[in-house]
Image (tube, rainbow, N blue to C red; front, top):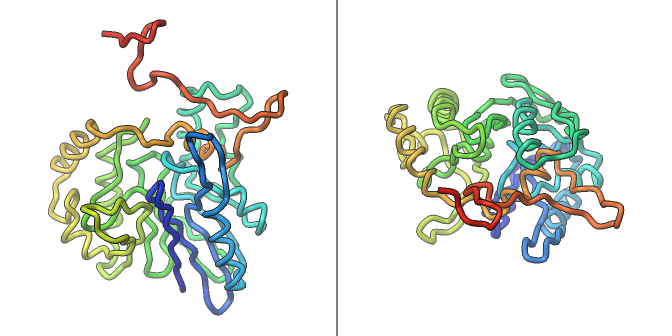
Length: 296
């Protein structure tokens, strides 16, 4: 198995291209659709770079896999599906996330909350095939209810659950997030994998200005992770995580990203005037009166 990482610096996101060098069967995990929030304009440079590698290597893209509905970047899963015919999969609890955000964004009545926008909803513990690649699905909720980790051979792709061993874990303050669930997902599930298991993270925030890093191991995480080591208790982690999350600003692209990603990466359809629109709730995190004055 070969793995190539692609780093989107504006959102600190890692996208992975994973393939069997013998059969050329491949999957992509967490692809990025570029988005400029000032111009409200999408572009495809990140996907074009990924596609160039797929084409150069002569790969057969079998699946596009999402670890969760991301709150920091738009997914280019539909663009890859259009170019390569690869279906799109996500954890089955995406339906809970869709239901939550349908209400928050006041999405149309016909917006489906059964996950039918995706080609496959994956169950915890199942193994499925992408050509010659066998992929195990491990539910790792906490950051969101629908988060999953993919295990391919000796490698885990942890999305926003577990980050580099010098950084920490994902935040848990999004709707239906849970620090207690994330503790169980990491300590009770991921840390039960063999110590030599490789870990490929969903983001790297370059702490203290260090160079990009995206691969660690379960052993290193258990020994070094500053937020959750093997000897960290549930109470210690939950207290730390909830206190830290209370200080964090919302992700820069949370509203744009989530409403696209719960719809499997489909961008909004044009209105009658042939213009596409995103929905941006106003003062969601700090309600105001009709004059914009914060409520006491």
